[in-house]
Image (cartoon, rainbow, N blue to C red; front, side):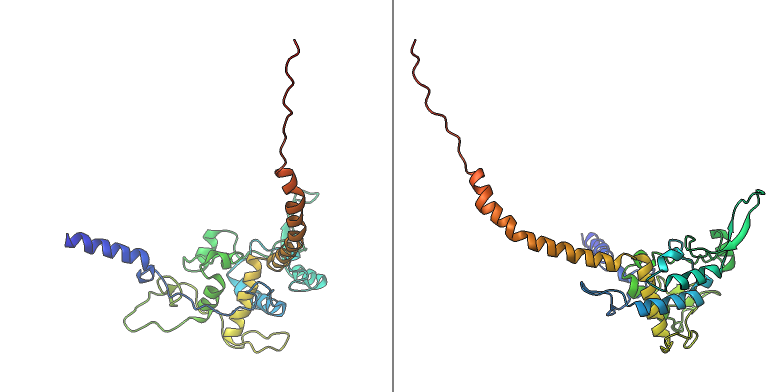
Length: 266
């Protein structure tokens, strides 16, 4: 009986306390992101800086498969700027009149360049590790924005007694603590256009904000539409209550009665 109780308690403990599992990482702390809250939108200055960090650092290994150049217009840069960025890349197109494929400059209708052509090529270039696509990374991880920021700033020397095999790095916020991605951000490795100091935490914050936008590009419009809908509902409450109390209640409580039929005269 005691053994059954011990096994049950152990099972309940594993269910209620998954943080004790060896494969789990340290839960990232909750950070006060400026776009959180019912009335808050994305910081577009931070989005532009985050795009710069992604372009100069993250795009060497990670793709944004769901983002097209046209999506950046009005959010990251002007139409002319985005056209210029797209034209810096070559895309395979065709066939032409001779039936051959050819290369051309990028257009607004193209998606952002893919780093690798397939998964096998990606693993071969990264010692077997597969760099994930970052388009929906904010939604793909619990506490997405906190997780991304913590991963980028969480590299540490492994604790005493923990031996990592070659090609792995210690990061307590990654499940298991051993991550195949080396530290990507270092102080002053990016020169911001607006003169912001490019510290590790600043770059991590900016690129995290950018990745939140790639996962939810409708974020700002959704909040504005939600408040418009609530305003319309609030304005409709008074006439609806008036109609129900004065008009509909009369119809609902109306009774139909028939006069007594006269006696038959035959």
